[in-house]
Length: 301
Image (cartoon, rainbow, N blue to C red; front, side, top):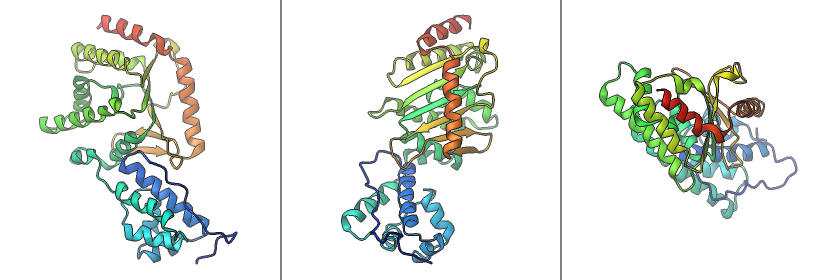
């Protein structure tokens, strides 16, 4: 059932500014716009689905940015939602094409699971990426040799060809650190990450050298939580928090598992992880000491 907007006024979409981002993020932004317009008109998912000859679940997936969009469907939904002015429709319809553009990472579909594909798309558009790690150096800061050792550990039966494909994907992600609009990557590493030998002493020295070089980048911050801290705030394990410039995108908490991942977006959940991250940064050695600590550990290898 469709009911008029409560106050009888024509509903307009939020302004679509010059959006930067991957197709993953643009789909989420477009979906959020459509959801807001539908809810402002008190239109049900079922009614919206009927207009584009689809199920209510398809509308729900569209609003979550989990499927691609067709211009015809978006145009029909905008008409249903009372957005009839061409000046308001055109930016959203133009967004459809950009949201459907295939990202560079699709070239690695053979080694990129769908649950991680979402993260790579979000990573491409984040303005701040904060990581806490207890076992491995974050992927964006891994040297090639270290990445190969980590990937071999996770995929012991992979062929050399598959192994190299996975390494190339990880190295390709690191181009993000050197772009014109690079995110600020802020990593908090447990000391165990640097003490655990992966690939042997030479690989670990190469990894520490890689981190030392990364510290020269203005958009990279690394802190180390020493063993002397004992138990600390993030006893539950590693996690990442991604922040975006788009107002339609809330912060996202990402936690990777063996064969899947968890994405948290609810404000109260994200706030809990933000609080833990802030406490970790206080408990960790200040970033000004990171270079000194890395050099000390390197000498001991």
